[in-house]
Figure 1: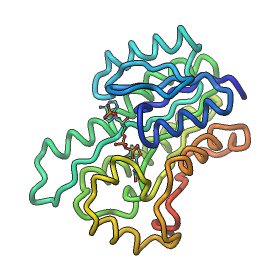
Figure 2 (figure 1 turned 135 degrees about the vertical axis):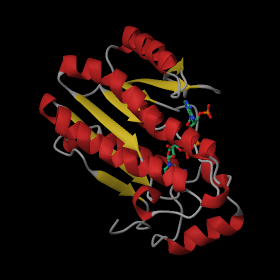
Figure 3 (figure 1 turned 120 degrees about the horizontal axis):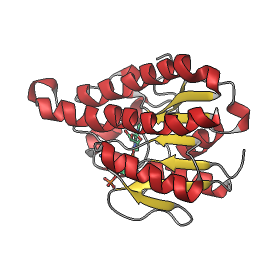
Figure 4 (figure 1 turned 90 degrees about the vertical axis):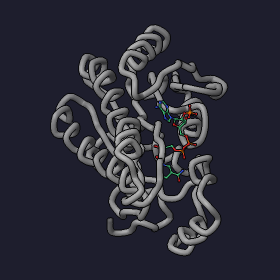
Length: 235
Ligand code: NDP
């Protein structure tokens, strides 16, 4: 299973960067999409915006030429546009869905071509605890993340017989630019609800993603794997 062609979207920073680094440490051939910033050392950086199919297609072509068909796809790129329902514009909603959900669909569709030819592949969609738990001020974000569960499960039913697995990793509150942007009061409120009593570090999510893409997790598909210190238990 080593030396696979791995592609992580949004791998220039945060959780995506940590995921890329975990696969690099594993000896895989890793590519990351970037809009800004650099790829981590040892990864091939390809410019792509997940809201733009043409840029995704071009990025995959570059990765395929350099590393071969993508065998492990991690759809990680995501945004928030938090605000309460009555203040949420249609653009606030559709921009988040376009990146987090349709963006995952775009890369999944492109990756599936190579996976079907190889008759193997691992798809990991980065969801969120709030996809199933819910969160005030995040109707757009939680809707986009819960829909990834349907995506992974439908993909499992559609392509599970071709050696392809699809799972959702649902992090809780992870230290990154995305959560640093939340005000102190919101951070404190979340912390009070996390049984582990702390936020996660990015590499704690990355190691679970790497495990899900590995040999030991070959019979897991359509699952939602929480990495949330117990925050979403039972959801
Ligand atoms: P960051 O904001 O730190 O990083 C987001 C990444 O996504 C960046 O690389 C960003 O690129 C990229 N990205 C955003 N929009 C696009 C786009 N249109 N096309 C390509 N790339 C894009 O977030 P995190 O690392 O915290 O989050 C990573 C994933 O984990 C997201 O899907 C998020 O929803 C999820 N998550 C995060 C949690 C947390 O607590 N941090 C909890 C649960 C889930 P650029 O640098 O160019 O903006």
